[in-house]
Image (cartoon, rainbow, N blue to C red; front, side, top):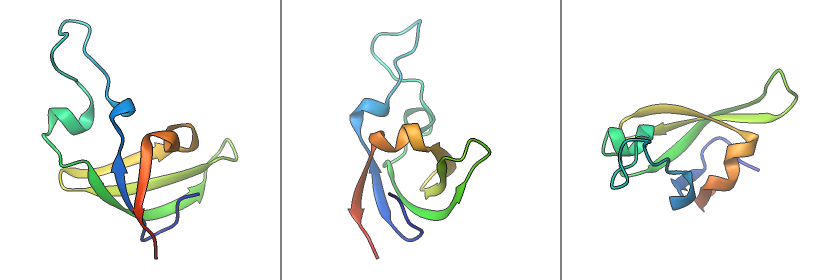
Length: 78
């Protein structure tokens, strides 16, 4: 379970390879050349009664839903 203040890293399984390219990923992080390490700024229960989180990365914020948490590795927790 993610909590505000957690330091997380996006795991390789999150990357999405583009339909037109087999050599590059077209996900938010690769597109912006992110370091893929971020801090959880907000967590809440969404309209599906599932936990969601806003995570601040070096290239901006990104929302992760509970089903995407499996792609995050908690590096450090408060």
